[in-house]
View 1 (tube, rainbow, N blue to C red):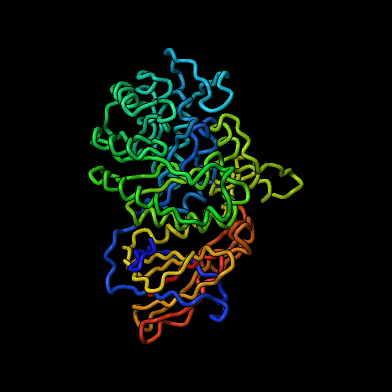
View 2 (view 1 turned 45 degrees about the vertical axis):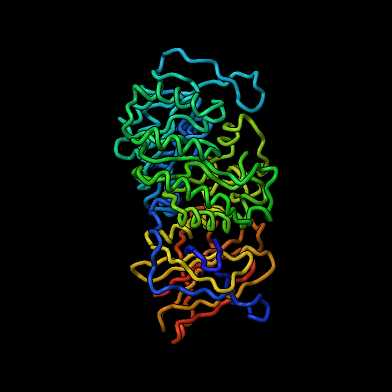
Length: 493
């Protein structure tokens, strides 16, 4: 995105106090045009994705699970939860008595038989209460691997009856490209299984890295509420701090292509499952501060290129490892003597934005605060920033809002501060800053967003507090330094 005339989206964090310009690289001059002419950041841009098998315990997604309710509500008061993943293709509605095929793992120990599990009306009623408590909507994935129109129809009836208007869309199957060799095979099965459901409120294809499937599905299923696919940077074993901080410009172009394909669908294009590294995330990377900078940049870049929503995969470790057919994702090891935060960390999948489970309770992790920062740009209109001197490892975004301008700057360099010279601002405007910072890129704790240091504490009463900076100069300029490995949200009014 950083071009000579750069489209840079907004939301940021700056680690204060400012370092002297003598320590930093030459200034990156960025000019804001007189008007914001880009697209509006959707209110739904930040969402979450969980495995369907979390419904096996109705206490998980319930209004009484107040720690999880609060984490969702604070992240986005108008968010969307996607339930799906590999475990969605093993689920059946409670009471279903029709014949079902024997299923075997797709990836490992393929001789083993995978059992089906029941989703009960009680679990869906609890889920409805959870959605009411959070204000979120739902994208729900129904089993396709069972190849049963009868199962799908009974399941969809129960989901629609119990969830009503909370349901944004129903999808059939999860990454069906893993069990159908061709799109033609997939689409023939999809048409047959979806027939008794009706196509109202249907979406898809919820594929893996199959942009062509999404384009064809969009043309062939014009009734689809939205178009969807997944994205991960790489496998967990190939993840690293250096890799996660490299912006994926190639995928920007894919998002733009898919957003164009989804223009005639009411809810546009969604990444219904995404995160840093598949197979549960990389320990020391996906759960470290670097993931906050990556998630912030990834979300705003997706919004800039036309995505309506980005659902970050997460949840308890046991659920993700169940989805991965027993694959050991690493990261365990905490016991009751190691403290609550360590146990919350061990209970969560490596890449989950929210840590913990029903036993430990829940707390935000570094990625969560990158997503929270990105969500603060929702509702604003992007500026097309003019970047006079592009700097390596520097990403920026800016949006216009009714209460002023918000700018995000992200410095992914591990050791080089960046000087920002911002031009075209309203003279004498008030300037407030909320830094997003941690002791190091691999830090898992001691993160701070804004002026409150208690960000990662479970149950902490946390609100974003800005620091006042000197007002914009009379010539419409401000200059500041963004420390290495940090981000900054600026708000001018």
